[in-house]
Every structure is written in C-alpha cells, then in structure tokens.
Length: 167
Image 1 (tube, rainbow, N blue to C red):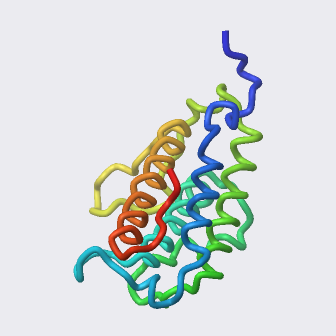
Image 2: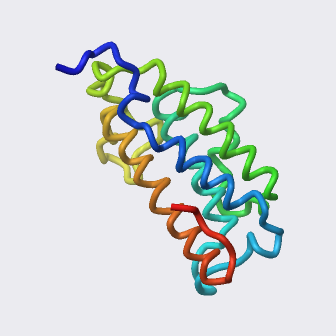
C-alpha cells in the first residue's frame, strides 16, 4: 500500500532530469538561434521556451496558488506583444518555475491529488461554466505540456544542426 504521506516527488522523478535537459539545450543558444523555427508560421525556439515558462506559472501559481507573487508576470511572457526573451531570461524563468514546481511536489502528498480547483480566468463565453480540474489532472497536464513543447524545441534545434535535448 502506498503511503498518503509520501511527497509527490516520489512519483514524478525524472521531471527534474527533463528540466535540466531543457536548460542545457537552451543555455548555449544565441539570439539568432532562439529565433529559429521549423517553418515560418510556427513558433520559434525562444517562443517555445517562453511558453513553457508562462504555462508553468499559469497552472502552478495562478490555478494552484504555488510560488511567490514575483512569478506572476512570467505568466504573460507568451502573450502577443511581449518582447523576445534572452537566453538568460529563459534560463532564469525555467529555473524559477522549476523551483516552484519542485517545492510543491515536495509538500504535496497522494492524498492531495484529488483536490479540485476552479479556473482563475473568466469563461471564454458568457454563461459557460468555469473550468474545474483536480490537482492530479493539472500536474499531468503540465508534465505532458513540458514534454510536448520540449520535443518541439529539440526538433527545431536538431533540424538546424544544433544539439537538442539529450534524451
């Protein structure tokens, strides 16, 4: 029987390794390399990095209330009109959002997974129900989001002769 007192890091081991690989892939890039894309209409490598950071803050800070309020501005990094972020900003964003995620996984237990949360955002259409998700759904969704967009980042880098994520 699994103890309901074990921290969730017990069950999400490996996400930290993926985090380090994201940082390792982004750290050596130049501004020109951050602008690389798979096609003109697709997001750039830098935009994928900003989107990963912004989405982490959106789910863990805005939905779940984790992390400091200093992280809140990062949730807007992937919105239209935002400036391109430097490698240093992306690495800092990835590291600070990972610290938020890791701290949460260390204090949450399996018993916490079923707790539900309502969206902090208004419904897209008037009269529509506010979205509600369990902590388990949010964690899994964010993990798969990191993996999906990290894969896109790795594809961009690889197709341009650069080192992608070392998987």
